[in-house]
Amino acid sequence: MNEKILTAAKVLYDFHHQERPTNHADFILTMGSHDLRPAEHAAKLFLQGKADFIVAAGGFGKITRDLWRIPEAEKYAEIMRAAGVPADKIFIENESTNSGQNFQFTKRLLASKQITVRSGLIVSKTYLGRRAMATAQRQWPEVDWYIDSPAMPFEQYPTNDVPLERMIALMVGDTQRLLTYPDQGFQVPVTMPDQVLRAYEYLIAQGYTTYLQWI
Image (cartoon, rainbow, N blue to C red; front, side, top):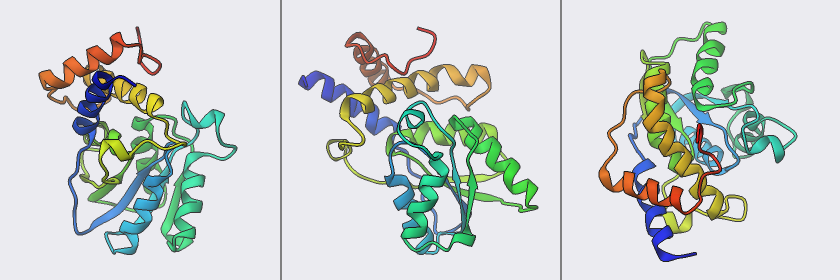
């Protein structure tokens, strides 16, 4: 892959990675995806005492609907139980199909169980962090949100299960959503540095358009 593409992709990756850690929140909300590392990270945080329980959120998304036979949340719950999280500390929200619904449906799930939360710790893919936080603050603003995702440099993130080409296309799609979703009421506005906009436009010109909308 050409060096200019890798450089632009790293700009997006570094921008999308957002952290706001905490010593403790009422619960962890793990946003499902095709990447299993957030489930492993959420289990680690829970076992460190960072939250009282976990919600694994996610049905079938644009990638996992062609990969798995069970919803993302159920796959994540399996991983967390295997890591030592007690089954009764994991709630499953397995109907959402996008980031906004992860929060909307989790809010509905907890309300149905008469559970009130004031703080939440988001665990997502590393390169979804900024959009995850922007979504949480719009969809569930009464909760004080923190975020703690797997921390690793861009060069180490791609794997056989998370191929680089797909990862770049997903980051381009998420950048577009950061630009367009606030006006649609899905997220709070996010300031986009010029360097990030240039990288985004360059990667579109290079054909990374698979996950763009309205193009």
